[in-house]
Image 1 (cartoon, one colour):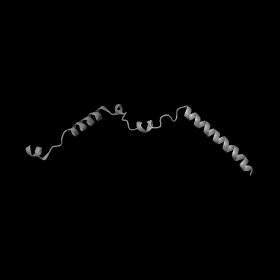
Image 2 (cartoon, rainbow, N blue to C red):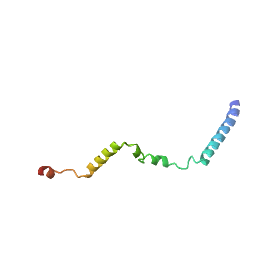
Image 3 (tube, helix red, strand yellow):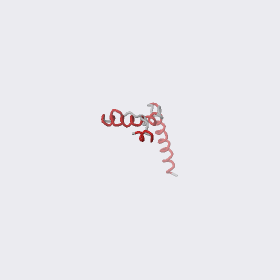
Image 4 (cartoon, rainbow, N blue to C red):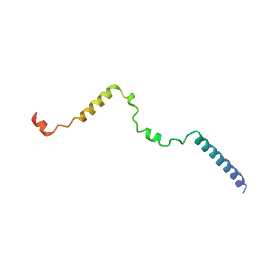
Length: 78
C-alpha cells in the first residue's frame, strides 16, 4: 500500500510534465503544418545537382520518346 502513495504523486507529476511539454510544442508551432513534409518529398528540387552531361542525355532520351516509332511501312520503304 505504501507503493501506491509513491506512484500516484509520481504519475501526477509525469502527466503534468507531459501536458506542459505538449502545450509548449503547440505554442511553438510544431503541429502547424502536418501535410507539408509529406508532400515536399514529391517535389523534384534537385535539378541543380544533376551534372550537365546527364541533363543533355536526359533531354535526348525525352526527345527520342516524342518522335513516333517507325512502323513496318517505314522500314519496308528504306
